[in-house]
Image (cartoon, rainbow, N blue to C red; front, side, top):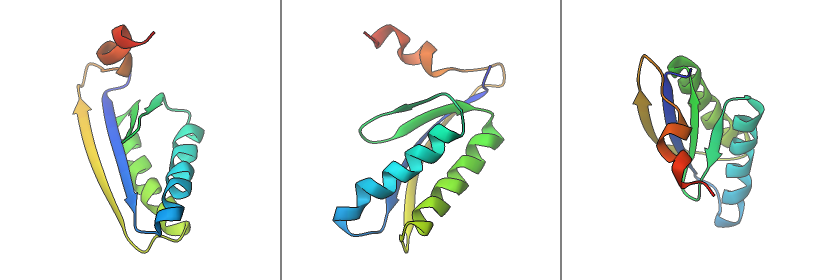
Length: 96
């Protein structure tokens, strides 16, 4: 079981008409990682090994820069539990 959940919100410094496109590229990179994740309207939550998740954050920053952002701010929340933690245990009962 994954030992961490990490919620990531990237705020790339690009023109308003480019923001969603850059964020879409970050989400595509997260999806390609194969890690369990959930996209929300303000952030994406990913579960995995903490080191792997922190590397994913680094890669997300680079995706933004590669897409033309000259600055990237990110908001990160981490829930770490050595014995394991999952997205489903937190919100599974709310899914339809």
